Image (tube, rainbow, N blue to C red; front, side, top):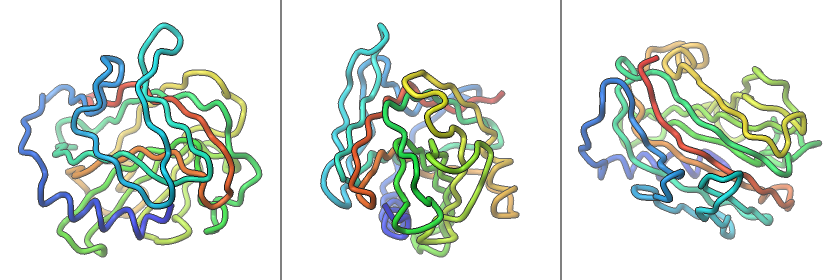
Length: 217
């Protein structure tokens, strides 16, 4: 799904951001292992990706099933990256979307991805996003502009079928990633989104998301 559609809608939702207070040491934004989806709102673009809490490998997780669809879950947040710059999460992909040219609009599908949005206002040009993706074609560590807009940068943190059907854990310094990709210091994250989408390729994909949190180290 094109970030030029996703980002403005999320930016508008920031006006309704809850004034929650967060721990200096850790901020839990996705508590799926407890069975909770509190704070997460659906956003549909084409069809409906099914998001449900299930039990897998003796733990709860958020399962995403996409059948040629593009919809996600978003949550407005207020993350201070000076205090908690690290994004931590785990995910598992059953069917990586291999063989797609992810630098094109026709190949802009991912079995699993997490958006982080920074906004200075309600206008699209004031919004930048990082999209951590399970890539089907790009090598791990590769970064490239989204095919629809340079305001969103994709970063491949997992690749292909090498770890298919396995839980993979990640930790990223979000502040450093924003600096590396946009050449600017970003101190806040205003929204986060999860998306498993296959609308461009019309394929099927299943992914699981574990807890998501920000930490000081």
